[in-house]
Amino acid sequence: MSNLTVLYDAPGPRAKRRNVLFTILFGLVLAWVLYVVISALKDKGQLDAAKWSPFVHGEVWTTYLLPGLWETLRAALLSLVIALPLGALLAIGRLSDHRWVSWPCTVIIEFFRAIPVLLLMVFAKVVFVAAEIGSEEIRPLLAVVTGLVLYNASVLAEVFRSGIHSLPRGQTEAALAVGMRKGQIMTIILLPQALTAMLPAIVSQLVVIVKDTALGGLLTIEYPELLRSAKTAFANYQNVVPMFIVAAAIFILLNLTLTTLASRLEKYLRNRRGGRRRKPGEPTAADAVLMDAAPGLDLNK
Amino acid sequence: MNFDFLSNPNYDLWAAFWMTIQLTFWSALGALVWGTILAAMRVSPVPLMRGFGTVYVNIFRNTPLTVLIGATSIVLADTMLIELSDRFDTNAFWLAIIGFIAYTGTFVCEAIRSGINTVPPGQAEAARAIGLTFTQNLTLIILPQAFRSVIAPLASVLIALTKNTTVAASVGVMEASLLMSNILEFEADGRTAAFLVFAAGFVVLTLPMGLILGAVAKRVAVKR
Image (cartoon, rainbow over all chains, first blue to last red; front, side, top):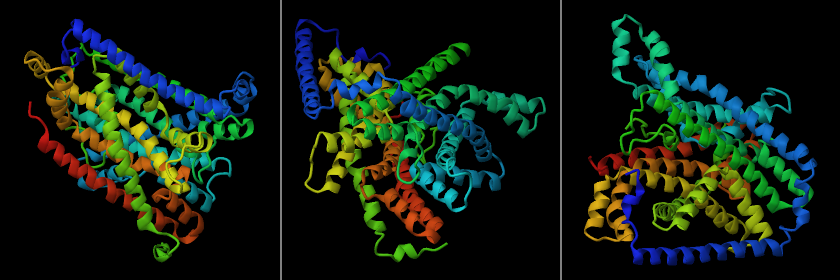
């Protein structure tokens, strides 16, 4: 039921009147909420021009926000680049015919999907400090990337695995028929196709990674990502609300761009493969990320 | 490994995990209701509601949870002086739950919407043919079937929420991750042990959710 207008009839005169009534009522409620929020903020002086003027000058951008954004992007991209091959390895391992390979891979995947990224980051930071790994400045980045890599490699492993499962069995059979070995089938036939099919899901996962970098500013991790720099900045400029709005807007714009890219990719890839139509209810690859967090649940059902 | 911190009265593990469970419970309840309302708005015949639903979901789904939870403390509590309780920590607890609901509701909404997509159009058409209104159509015909097909996605949203409650540590709610962070800081020789205990705690919380709800999902799924 992708065409949702099937839920109601084309409006007649009465339904049209009712829709107008509901529009007005709902509009009033929205306007009231907006009024309450804005007047409360105004009372506290958070909407004064003076609180916003720092954003017109370059300083707040060059000292806080842009470096923060850079740190966020750096941690996110670094994590993705490391997590992708690691995830592929874990996926191959889990699909292995040898139980002594598949079993540990399964345990690793399920374990790191079951525990919060924040715990991983906090523990990684403590370990790096205790073992004196890396310099003082690089440790927060290392902790953030470690946490994100462990978690996202496990998630991506499941994404790859469901991608490999979604390929027609004829691919494996044909490869066997021409005399390929198991390793060859995986690396030459299955994985490249699964990677392409799951590309939109991987881009969507990048959204999750970008959002999770914001955890790096919490507790004892002290990674100067965008949110943390924004917090330092509003302590300086005394403009809490404008700073939160601007930081959130940067994150939202970044993530919306990635989401749009993912759905474009998905459309492009589907057209390229001769336009196989999705069955109703079949999740899109980008939706598959919705399922990411579930240890014990299987993406392939 | 040194498990001494387990018997240290300063570290109340049960209280911390009980806090995590409470955060999860109330947020899940609120997010289920709010997400269903959002989903209903997004398929409703009123254009303004559809527009609001779309804009809301796209904004809140793409904001890091850390930003939202930080905002509940710094904007709602410190700047706008909203008080849900006289006690500072109880206030932070409920405000954080509002943040979790605002964020998780968008994922619930999207899951339910994808569930609505699995209901064959004939169901809605038949409902219209016997004269059901949009509200009746949605609440009697479509949503009951949609819910049955989205138990599994909702389960993963619930598990993600359980793990996400750790973000409440940033506003001073004494839940599992904040306690672990404290123990790691002060108990130098119990670090690995502490991490393993807390990790095991989360595995114990989340794994049964996945297994049980996965089984439920299979049982109640509509065979088509």
